[in-house]
Length: 396
Image (cartoon, rainbow, N blue to C red):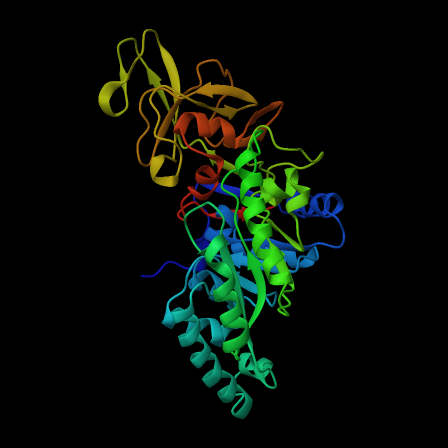
């Protein structure tokens, strides 16, 4: 028999999202950002694990102008949740994905002439259909509209998406002059390293992007949205703000590096918590976990936590700690896909059902995403996006 939705989210391990702090973070970023700039909020990969629809709506309420995702499915989810802000898909889309972009009013990047020719024909057919049929609410918004907005990405040194900066102008001119159903709304680039103290390469990329902007200025092509700054650029490179900035990890209260500028009051939105389902008394000589990486040298009390690397917690061996009763409790042994064991011998009143914080704050203690970065030997972005969907999200 299928379980009722009444029981959804009752698992004893979960991700907790502080919605109040999220709103505060957006307010602080707005206050720190020049008022004339447009602002884009990146909500790809479920807003880095925080919930794309919730974060997108908060961004809209905070006055943001644009959203960005990485896949067409992510964009469609937002549209079907009645998110009406313009949405940009990063990277490249294929023909089928472009058709979906048309149907759902999604903006994509077009970075080569062959694709521009095909997409222009698709856009021509869609504009004609929308004008004559207007069969759906989305098509009704197209009635009377003669072009489809696209952005062009300039590769200034990431060697990833886009057209090289020194090959860009002919493509921009072709799309602007020959593709009558495509409108170049925006031009963008992306920093490879904008958040470190050494800005040499970031400034090299900026200079390359400026050469493209200057070349466009010598034509009659007008482009409204010019954007290059990700979070690092937003914080540290005001000369690279152009007409729009992109906030990715910042509104989530996490900084991209230890050396970039800080905004007072900004704080993480995400915590990861569990409740203790089992306690186990160890005797001297007892082993703990796969691989027997821990042996008790004295009687101990350990708590078994219902969360492991299958949920996104780092796969550790006698490394790391959690918070219980506001105190650090070290991980013992090797954690499993679904369980992690911690030493609670020093907690006199520990009990089944007690709250455990694996990331976040409790009492005077705090486990930052960067602490998990050290244990997992990765970056903050992977920590945030790595919490699996089987952990229910609770918004408080």
